[in-house]
Image (cartoon, helix red, strand yellow):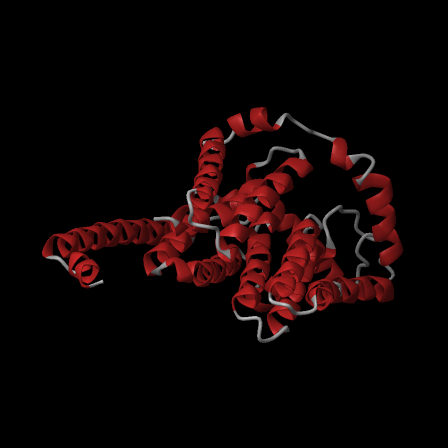
Amino acid sequence: MADNVLVRVSPSSAGEIGWARAAAGLLLGGLSGLILFLAWRSLGWPLIHDAPLMHYVAWRIGEGAVPYRDLFDMNFPGAYLLHAGVLALLGSGDLGFRVFDLAWLGGTCALLGAYARPFGMGSAAAAALLFAAYHLAGGAWRAGQRDFLLVLFLLGGAHLVARYWEDGASLRPLALAGLALGAGMTLKPHAGLWWLVLAATAAEGARRSARPWWRAGAMVIGFGLLVPAAVALWLWTAGGLAPFLDMLTRYVLPLYSGLGRAPLWQALGGHAYGRDILILVGTLAALSLWRAWAGRALDIRRGLLLMGLGYGAVHYGIQGKGWEYHLYPLMGFAAPLATSWV
């Protein structure tokens, strides 16, 4: 025991640790400087692509129009409500939307840091910085995309379920996880797949600690229905629920879902570094599994990130359009997984 202690505090080991910390500090400092530059440069981004359409629909709803009855659009109502909040708080201009996008990015990065904190402060900082660089380097058309906004809800649900696994003293994190995932489903229904995965994960955590598994799963499922139910009630009272269901069943599912589909490998090849990103993510998944098989079992946080990679791949593939911003959930889980072993 004493020999082990002496080895750990030997001058050579201390010197190696010092150099490693200095190198990590330089790397993180350089990445921070790059992100500050990219954020400053992004202040001039115009309101383009999908954001003006969402702004317009939200403005029309504020003027008394009924969504899906007076305005035909295939997006889910949570996006309109979110843009209505941006219009009310920040106005309709370019700068107001930049403030919103950067604030949402800051919240997502803070959550990434909180999720990865058990891996170490360096890992937490690197995860947040990598995701920020990925978003800000993508250009103005990525600002405020629903897939980007969704990462906050997806990762928030995972963080809360991980907390339940780690302490299990209260069901409150599971209730909050359900609320977060339910809010995400009003932006994009694909989040429902992750909602079910986390409900099953919560149930398994309860079973392993000899608590009622059905209660944990029911908390995530039940609270996950509250926000969609509230949004459906709003649509019903406004007269837009029946047109919404008609649009969903007669346009989105039979027609729009099959338009513009492309082989995923071909679609990724059209992205800047698309196939490189896919190879990187696959390498991270293989590394995580290898570490587990090598005797360092996956803890719940790394396990959820690995499952999140699977969800992110399905999220990208099931939409079938090959659009670059559909990769956001995949990258949201890849960033903390990449830094968790470093």
